[in-house]
Length: 206
Image (cartoon, rainbow, N blue to C red; front, side, top):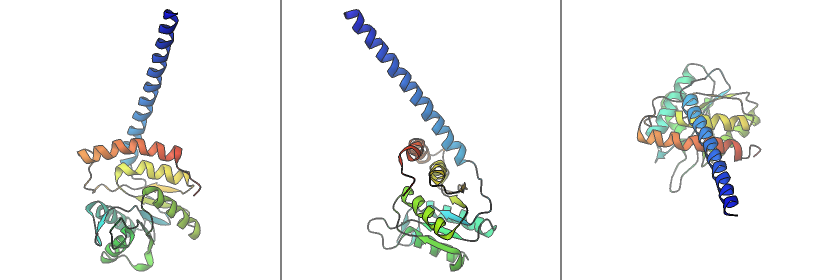
């Protein structure tokens, strides 16, 4: 009886070990994908450039948001797309939205109103992507270029694929969040978990 119990426990521990090893390998693959996708700029001609929202302070873009906007405006000036879509709603206590702040910044940098579209209700990456997918379907846009930080790109592209939104990634390299800084490493580690979870769990039909 004792021998049978020891045999069972040994088999159980071996199974748990194998499962942990598989999970570790999958996490390693996800981590590598975050880094690889985040370092690849696949921008090409599209119907719109989408800037994912980030923090703003009383109408002034945070350094992270400003870096995304500068990159998107450079793409626009290169003729990558004829319009910019700015996303992001209001955080608690805000007097203006991330999208509206982005619009003001773009106008000050020479982008005309006619080239700007806003999505100013979303409060998360998931909400932003679903809203953009709805906007593009309504306007019959075929494809978009997504602009955000490097650590963010894998999750964005996986979400776009799930939403049947044809998208190209164009990460900004001037963000104050460098991948080698403690903050950047933390974001990369978080995204290595968030990206596969977003793909596996989030509903792509909303």
